[in-house]
Length: 175
Image (cartoon, rainbow, N blue to C red; front, side):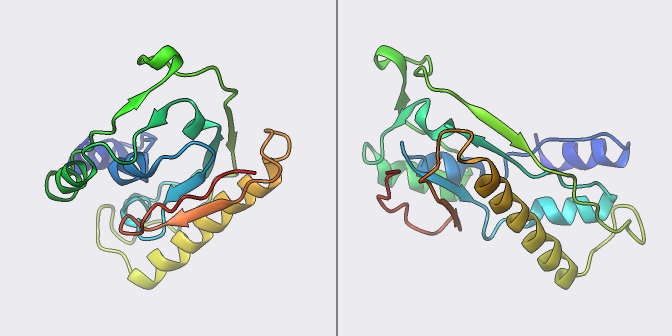
């Protein structure tokens, strides 16, 4: 959905779900690696502050293992499309090399909502220092969720990487 659509729903008091990592995160997906593109993503925090909407931290274990995503095939072209057009074309395959996900357990954990201060004016501008503070709180909450539930989800030795969209994906595998 577009930003305008999200703002319309928030202004009406509805809840929305946003895949914060977006197209950049889909290009960085790698089996056995728990990584989120979240470091420089603050637009969702600004929206929450503008409309007084709480932020609910979540994490899904096993998400990057449901499909294999090619890290090299047409990568320069896919990165160019992502940067210029905000269009992501991950080349992926799952069960039997097809479009169905591989049989992997998924476990989604949901944290306590993070209350944000109500806006001075609904839809108005917000203080960037407040954006930074709430964003840091959100990132810390996601990290806590990961650490608190990784053992129960079968990822006891895993660690969570929080990346910016411009960081290279690295080749870090789960032990």
